[in-house]
Every structure is written in C-alpha cells, then in structure tokens.
Image 1: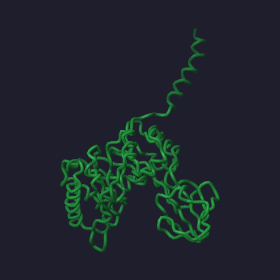
Image 2: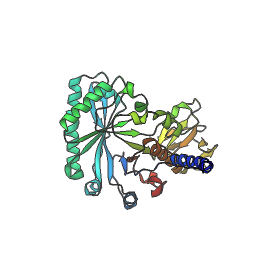
Image 3: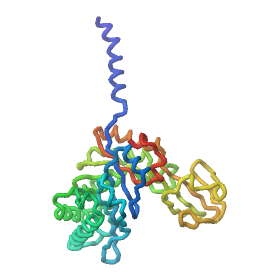
Image 4: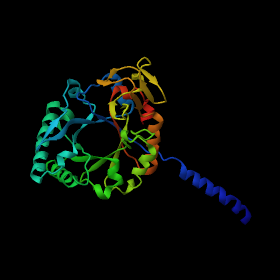
Length: 338
C-alpha cells in the first residue's frame, strides 16, 4: 500500500502544478476611448459595440495647454446631433492636460484652473445633453512627473472638493507604476493604466514601440502593489514611423500597410517600406529615399497582453480600448476584443 501511494503522489503533484499553470480567465467589461473632434456612430459601429456589450465611452472633450502664464482649452470637441440622440451609451468626460500646465504654477492658479474647467465642462455636458446632463465620473489625462506631481495632485484634490458626488479618475502611465515611489500616487477614486507606448519610436529598438509584452511585464512587475483600483487601457491604433536619411523621425498616426501602394512604396521587410517618389501621406510631404515602418497591433499581440494581465492581476477588471474608430474595428473580430 505504501509503495502504491509513492507511485501516485508524483502524479498528484504533476496534476496540481499543471492546474496552477493554466492561464487565468477574467470577466472584462469593454469600453472605448473616443478621441476625435466630433462623434460619428454609424450602424456598423453601433452593432459592433452591441456585440461587445459595450455601454460606455470615455469621451475626450478638450485639451488644456499653457501659453505664457495662461492655461487655455484647445482641440475642443464639437457636439453633433448623433451624440445628443445616443441615449444607449454612458459617456465619461475626459480632459487632457499637458504636464507644462502644472510646471512652476502657484496654488491660486491651480484652484482657478479647476474652477474654470468645472464651468467649461458642465457647459459642454449641458449643451450636448449627454447622460441627461449629469456626470458621475470625470477623467483627467496628464503625464505628470516628480517635479509636477505636487501641483497636479493639488489640482485633483480641489476638483474632488468642487465635485463631491462625482468619481474623479486619472490615467496612469506605465513608468508611473514602475517608479511609483518617485512619481507618487494620485489622490483619485480610480486609475486607468495605459498599457501602450511601451517604448519610444525614436529608440531604434527592433520591436513594436506601441506594445511590447516583455517591456509591459518589466514596467508592471510591482503592479499589485499599486494602492488604488485600476482598469486597463489597451491599444487598437497604428502608426507609420517615417525616417529620413539623417534618421530623423516623424509619426503618421493611423497609417497601415493598406495605405502604402506598390507604385510609390517598395516593401523591403515585413513592416518596412522604401519611398520610391516624392509624395504626400495624410498631409505629410515625404521625399524619395525615406523609409516608413508600420507598427500596428495584431489580434495575437492583443490577446497576449490580455492573457498577461489576467494572470498578473488575478481578479476581474475592465478594458478600455484606445480608440473608437471604424477603421481600427475592421481589423478585429468581436471575439478578439472580448
């Protein structure tokens, strides 16, 4: 009997270890960022969102930039009839604020900025009639640094005071997770970790600078130590990295392989093209001899990122895809985004 147990015991251990290695699976509520100047929702996109049971859109309202000593809104969202009539979607206003706004700024200006943003945001919400003129969450998007964290966090506290019944959330960059002791923890109700831009397109690394799983793992090694509740933003976008003969780089957002025909561009590797004649691409003039590298997110790469987060986080979480665009959605099936 004892001898038989010794034979069975290794098998049991093997089965237990096999179970522990199975990829975790979690439920994800799916939503999208909307980062265009106006809201266009045709039936194809609407049906796509229904297939994902998507009921929420994070709507970019405007940017705040600093000009001299004055902070002002730019890139203001244009309200359209389709937005007013879309009662099936819950909208969360998103405001992007450049880091410079909080650089060398005193407290009185920070409080004034928060008050002006409340007035401007409420006016836009009322004019657009989203959520029946109510707000239950406002998200701020700012790539703050150790030198600006005190002012940004003061701003967030003041916003919470003037919006006592509204959830205040903030985007979180990957480096702000990795270096949380230096960059600090924002005083918000919720954070949204932006799981993209894992490296700089200028770095010259032979990998996808939008999303690299190894770099994502490195940045989020201490993810479970972050003290506020997080949801996760994943990329659907693409871009073209244009390099001239001096290795100077420009980005063309939204560029894909399908945009580069065989007459003006010669494919020299899987993702790289040589420009054969002077031409315009999406309003950018490029010369003969330049190279263009296409970076986009394949369904496999996206699935690898979700599987990594599932295993790392060990609980249900929400996914916000950046961003809502018919062109981007055409690249993925509904099942590939679930």
